[in-house]
Figure 1 (cartoon, rainbow, N blue to C red):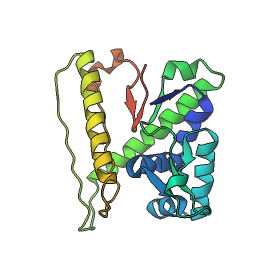
Figure 2 (figure 1 turned 90 degrees about the horizontal axis):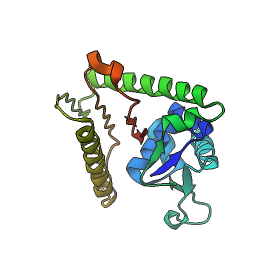
Figure 3 (figure 1 turned 60 degrees about the vertical axis):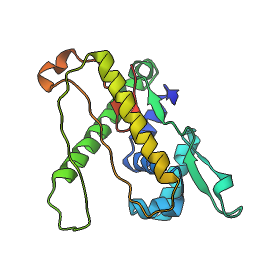
Length: 200
């Protein structure tokens, strides 16, 4: 997993459309702009623009071996294992505090949207979702181990999905592991945000 400290990159992934593109590429492995546009319900030229912006910061790259011909552009994450930030490293850079605040606002809004969507009534008969909430007593070290184990499990399912041609939809797996809010005052910065690791 590549670790970045450039505030411009943090701002780039805070953009909702770019964040979703990164999520889709993480799930699918590779994708064309037209396929991403269809998944996000945006124009293909808009998907291409955001892909170029992500490529400018080295977050995505072309996958020519997946292309049908020289005009066919297929994209993938530059680092298949994901994107990592250390909040304190970003904060030490010029513009870092503003970038972290933009990212936090965007991540918080995305989290609210995912939870509200999960609990919303829907008339779509084919929409399946599972909501679980559990409590576990852990040390900080055990919590970090559990986080890694869950991430490994999700990655194993990503690989499994890429090995077959079955028709699939992208599911959001929103992971939040933290002490109950009444003891949050003494908790360090998040160790995982919206699928992008942010270790201290």
